[in-house]
Length: 238
Image (cartoon, rainbow, N blue to C red; front, side):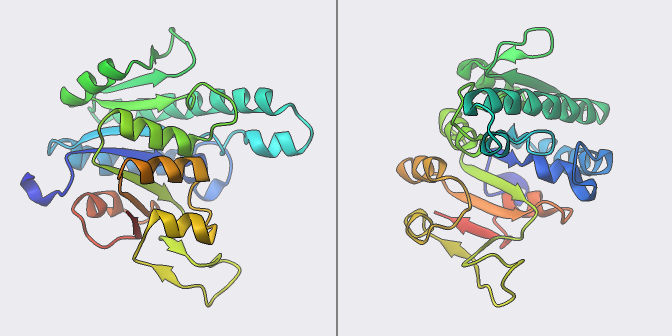
């Protein structure tokens, strides 16, 4: 592809925690602003971008479930949190002249379109960023699984998982200073080692559909573009 990019159509998975930045809760405007500027640079070069956003900065369904809340109810509240994040991203992107569409798996016609695969693909072909909110619309499925599912559905060439860690380690680098980082790893090894990169449903989905994934640190400006060019950022799972 032109301009040195390795991929043309990608799906970017943003965790809710990444949007919270150093604040730790809610949406940090500085993070969203920086993200919009980074994305503007490569979308203008013709990259087709879909985004799946989490909601952990506002509400974590599994944590609430562990505290005794009904799991399905907790997951639905988490889905609503992802819509708030999606609208915040849309606002930031459009202030920078980027055309965006929010598509929600839960019907919310006043603020978003319903998720329709063919319509989403058409938006991508027209150069619009598609922000996918409300997960799959089903409880018991994480936004990681949503990202893997939507990436397969939308014929993405790669799944970019933006986190606060610079890749995949054999143990938690925050707990173990001796933790070893992988440059590349197979999905089968991720599953057999029990590495908590994504949940097992998402990992299996990527593996079954030969979808490569790059796990990298979002807090380093320019990392998304580097991943798109195939540079060695983070860890590639294939």
